[in-house]
Length: 311
Image (cartoon, rainbow, N blue to C red; front, side, top):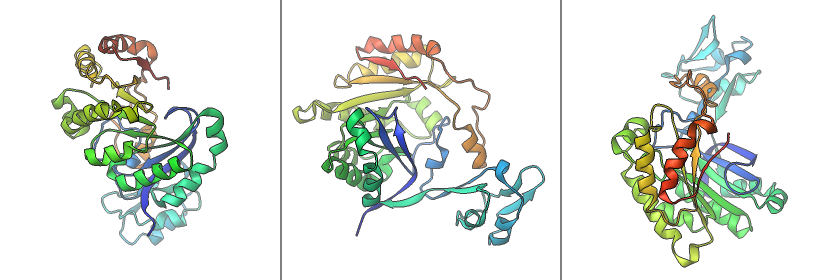
């Protein structure tokens, strides 16, 4: 029986998720609840229903088919969804003629995933690109992720992963054997701050970062790329103290190829509205490179190569 996984998006021609032109597969499900997450539709494993009130034409078809009294007419926003009652059955999506209601989430087999990735194989060859699996969190669906990456490698396609590192080491280690480039997040070294801002402890994450470092130090893995990514969030982990603590931790990751400082952006704000969720960074301006230079310089004290990623 073919292994399948739950995804919420496939982004082709991506330029920021590994070398060259990439096909980025977003896995559904994540144990973290980062307050700044720009892909809230990737948090839950089950499907999510987006509702864009600007596209609603008021036909009422969604109201007619909903069996759980989860659709209501609002003078301001049209036919809205009561998320507490919604079972994500998708009936309202199927009858919506304007695309005001859409579903985020679908099952896909390894064979189907490889077929989609292979469409852009000529672009991979010319740009040294390939396939990247991210999320959500890939370690929530480790078997599927491993099989997709393995199939890509067997087909001569470069592979990359993006992960928080929050998962079982046995799963991550197996995935790394078929991965060319690994991006691992480091939100903060501070345990209390990590728990406050993501909802989970960072103990396992820090342990896995060190284990990845050791894995990359083995002779057979020397050609693999290991990059640590630090999202710098205003008012959360952007202090001098946070930067110094991160720099101290990075000193021990001597097989880390580079460190990427990720500026804050609020591009995901509209997704929160479409999911009926509140977004606490609505009035927070996007970060600029200039705002992060001091943070970058403090991280460089670790001896690692540190760059600020442009949005």
